[in-house]
Length: 260
Image (tube, rainbow, N blue to C red; front, side):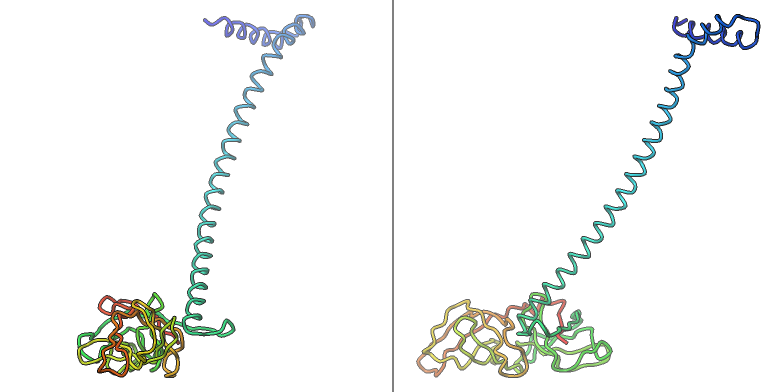
């Protein structure tokens, strides 16, 4: 048997005898108490230490739970802030693209393309927003990249038809972004989209951006249309013939933004 345990056991028995036999001398009792009390305090303090340890562990667990909850809330708030910043940035880009001042409010709606005909001369798409969504004829439609798609030509209750800039009926007043020379975007019978009425004296470059000029009262000034693909300066032509690659790939277009 462990000596330390045996010693403690003897002291405990001695203490019990002192309590049971009142006649024992006070000196012996004092001696036993004097010896036993440090051991009693040791076990008592050990017990308190264990209890305190459990209390600390419980407190740490509660703090960890609260910390995780706060982190989750923080992530949600950061996500909401990021979304608001994105919306604000997109609105600023739209305002610049549509030449709208900061004081003016811009209202938009997102729609999905549910049908299209882009093989003929009258190119159009069908979107899933109509009169019940506040859509009206003449509203401008752009891509998610803020490039010009076309405008609303017909409106039903739940659907609208958008005439594309690649349609033969879609003559658009445009300008060269750098040169600032104005012309007209058309589509010929070969299916080419070109810019007409650019004098031969004007120096232009391939891949130069073309934007709306706003002079046709159909589209606001400054919306990106496309880039110059080829330049034809044949002698039998009064103007330069400039073919254009639209900024929007209409065959892959799935979602659009309506400027309301």
